[in-house]
Image (cartoon, rainbow, N blue to C red; front, top):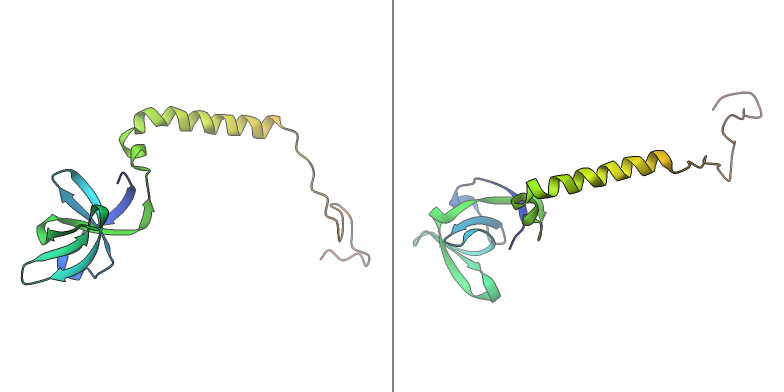
Length: 124
């Protein structure tokens, strides 16, 4: 519940057991794993809350969830206007500290130092 996921429409007949699907229910949009197809009844069986198997009609399937899914991050999409100043403030602080903090020049332990020439004069 409350995941931030990308899903794309797909016909109900093209799903396979184990696919994660976005399903429109009376409680809203849910992400559920499909376990078994029943083409005669036009329903998919799914492991819903606490392993109670539910039947989902083909018409309730909204789409197949792609590889992009962030569990428990749905509040970002719901509260975006509130979180935008927080993200902007964090980016401003990061930029400020990257300019203010002293930068240490990298000195390699092995090989040439920056600005040194090779022994034979070649730049390799």
